[in-house]
Length: 256
Image 1: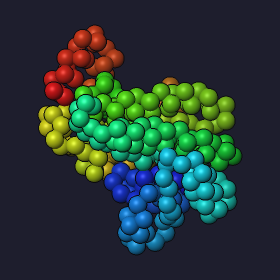
Image 2: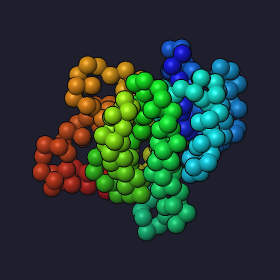
Image 3: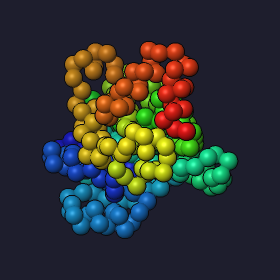
Image 4: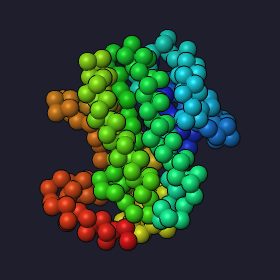
């Protein structure tokens, strides 16, 4: 069976993705920092392979991937870099610890994951790494500035590794949701109020599934990003085809 390792997989988008892939016969590993959430997910889904993982720690990545691949004959078809946190508020008002944690989990975490997973992905034909980005990386978002900046990093890392790993037959893509109904949603932000929190974890999980089953056109065009929902598609296209001042004013209206 093909296999997928999901960081931050015990709740929200990660758990929805695990459920989707398991329903299609995949071997699924969910690794998370929350032991309570892992226990709950395992109780509901006995076939899941579970383990603890703090994505900020390279050794924990190495141990978790070794544990998971011990169940798959050493192969890894998909790494889903899903773990992330968001702390909303003006930069001048959030704590130094909140800033540090977002950068360490949302940016460093996926980088350590990529580095640790590379040997397994390289050894598995036509493997994928999926990075969960965000519509907040289309244009920098006030009120969630650190999170937004970290997701720009995710986009850049995805593009760089898509080129770097192509000779190894590893496809690298990113998933771009807007606000989804998860613990990361910040309903107090203006953009969430204006645009609404319309996406479900299952919507994002479906896009992850699509991204690792690419069409011939996706492969031919070397597609690296997958928008989730019409709103994200509109905002993304707007940023590409209109002057920067227009994108700035649209985002100013949405976020302030």
